[in-house]
Image (cartoon, rainbow, N blue to C red):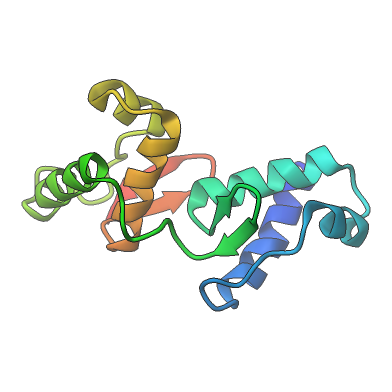
Length: 139
């Protein structure tokens, strides 16, 4: 592994895992001071962790440990239910690379943000496993 941002992401990953859901993460400014790196480096580290579903960002409020809100819009909840059914029915092979955010977005006419929310919901149900830099895999 290389890259300062990945090292920082690893350090934060362990800390976040130990925090109760709903805990607010430190601000970017606080993390810059702690790690003594540029703000962009912190943002890259946080982007990795957010893509993994370690926390959610609520614009204007901050970043919070845990997952996307349970009450997904109906269109996203329907997509989650359909994909969950397919995963449970064995339509996807265990260990198989699942849809990327961009693939899911294209196939379902979703924004990348909404595609990520769908994938995170499937991770929360224990159906997908994120692998940093490699994608999400069927469990």
